Image 1 (cartoon, rainbow, N blue to C red):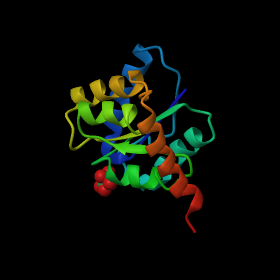
Image 2 (cartoon, rainbow, N blue to C red):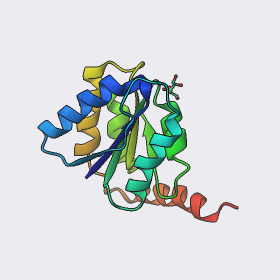
Image 3 (tube, rainbow, N blue to C red):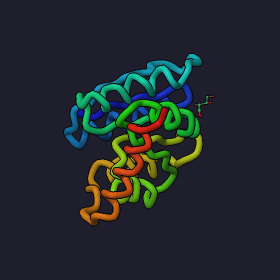
Image 4 (cartoon, protein in one colour):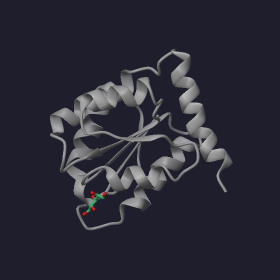
Length: 148
Ligand code: RB5
């Protein structure tokens, strides 16, 4: 199950991604938003991030104008590694090196056909089996566990 959320800046791209995911046969939970009326992106990032953090969804896709606000918000949720990506190489590395469980895309930044390819890369790419990457991701999660 994939969680997806957007704000008012990214309704069109979210709908394209949803159609793309359905074409792939993916099950998804649409956490909104549902119109181009101005909303606050943290509300929607949080809904999707909690689904991923609780294990109800295996991956999450966030889309706002730049992807930046959504990624910052999602990364405040324990267990979330949300990668803000604007290109295919970053989407691949986010999985291979960072074991990202969410990706944040910028509907006003990245061409929409590129964004669809990034979604495929994000969903298809496994985490590297090189131990150094697991060690580094563990260190990231240790920061989360040990901070005040
Ligand atoms: C909305 O205007 C915009 O700030 C939002 O979509 C996003 O780009 C925030 O990071």
